[in-house]
Length: 210
Image: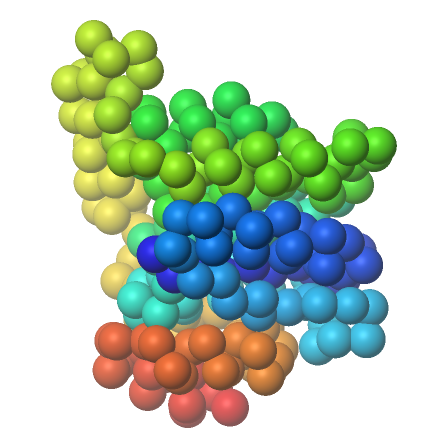
């Protein structure tokens, strides 16, 4: 699995802590991590609005399989990512949230609070979150006897979002071009995207905006 990590400007200073724990867990599971920013306060500036754009591009193009992100409360990142077609983001405060999201909702992104409640032992909490998010088989349901209905409902919700959402490229072209340009301007995003993206139409779109 290819996992992208991204932070917005207010929590850029915590990126190193988050990346360290994510890489530890990913290495144990054989996953790859791409830290696409912000890595520090001087990195290419991103808000949680930009995080949604980046997540949509990486996931819909096939450049990555999963996105880990967040902001001060995690709520802004959650809303921003879920605004985009092809992105199903859960809100995660503790390890049980990660486990239940993986088993019941089987999404492709997590938003975490990186300021609220991020105190003593925070690095342990996020490590345990990542362990629950990326260990074992997803979509098994919880409790197990409810798997059938949960898998069915997750599929229905995905179909509803697809029906309501615009075609992804149409949606991208409806967004303020300045927001797109800022979102894709970072070297770390570009390296990850152009090395691993598989959708030629989305690749062409990104090239046209650079």
